[in-house]
Figure 1 (tube, rainbow, N blue to C red):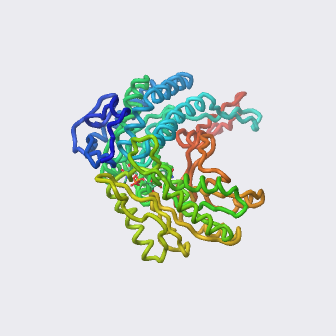
Figure 2 (figure 1 turned 30 degrees about the vertical axis):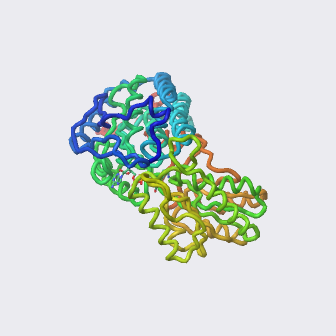
Figure 3 (figure 1 turned 60 degrees about the vertical axis):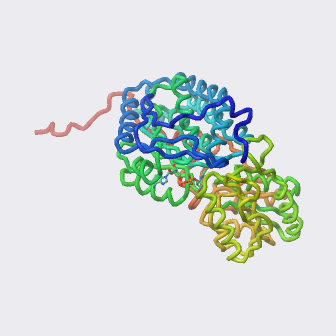
Length: 503
Ligand code: NAD
């Protein structure tokens, strides 16, 4: 049994119950959803599902808070101060939040600390700075008129998040929405409610007025569906799977509610023979095995140029076999358990599919030995003969790399683009020409040359094709969470035709 009760665990508490936090009050009535630690398979607490009445209350509270104006009409200086305080408080609770995240989703603790919680802090600091720099426009082209364009917060944003990086992704949505004065109703995944619950408490502690951020828990098909189709919301921001994204867009569309959808991926990771070999190898391993392979931007389709194919595959498999799998509470662990049992079974089913499709599984493809509990799946590498196989087309969302060979740059671009997804793409080359061609040829929202993921919050992050609608960044969030208003003021009394004045 992996040890989850080390030095870190000893000092922190699991919430006795993750209730719904509405207007600063915690509501604990409702069906209870078990929260399961993927490492011990134990129920560690429960989340309370928000029924229709509770959801209505959350949305009404968000609306009333918005109308009342303490936050929506506050100066950006004030909002900035509160956002900075939130960031500081999250940073102060970094260890606790990282531990809760690891307990809930199984991410290795070092990654929870240095990536997930660090990103949550950054999200609030970034939007604190951004919101103080916003400006409007003025037009003078009509000589007698001054036309000014200002931005106003929209009202209530519904924010629905996934389970794979809950604190990092949910806080991006919260910070982006509230920085511009909106209120919101947040629904974390039913599988990962722990950090959203704790962060909502910290928001209140930092001085965010009650009712600006309201938390509802619940399953996707019930609370999630009711939230997306509710006529009291003004914006909907969603991160999750593509099929869910379609359902959500269609539900929100009935009320003409604009959406942003951050969806799935099956990103190409292309290695040319002129690349810095060690960097490409390190980056490719990080690209597929970080966060236990459960990341939308995983470089899960590895394409390797023929002259280095055999060497790369051998080295990649050898390093995969060396990955330190174990308890996610151990700081040395590089791979922990998958987040849920159903997800484990789904990832496992792709190993069978790979075999059926004629792929060669060079390592992994099965439950890891030696664990009496936990959803531990062996890091897997499969060589695939063709790109049109399901194994290369469907998002597996686990520590499961597929590797294919290519010959020319044109082959690489074609294979990269033969996908319904278009989230990100990685290219490893020392040729400037190849790099600049990749930037033009690849149909994805982000092309990373000679680097694993680097998230620059000023730049848009969003997918092409089935990977998403819209994007998230400072400017994208400002555009999404505000309405533009044009006001026209004559600078001299205009001469108006006098309708109806002639007999
Ligand atoms: P999911 O689509 O199953 O669930 C996401 C959220 O939607 C959860 O809160 C869930 O309760 C809710 N939901 C489910 N059905 C719903 C419905 N009918 N109406 C309203 N809400 C509903 O996704 P997941 O399994 O939690 O997350 C994994 C997926 O998220 C992967 O496909 C991954 O690629 C994607 N993802 C994308 C990004 C990105 O930035 N593009 C980032 C992380 C994860």
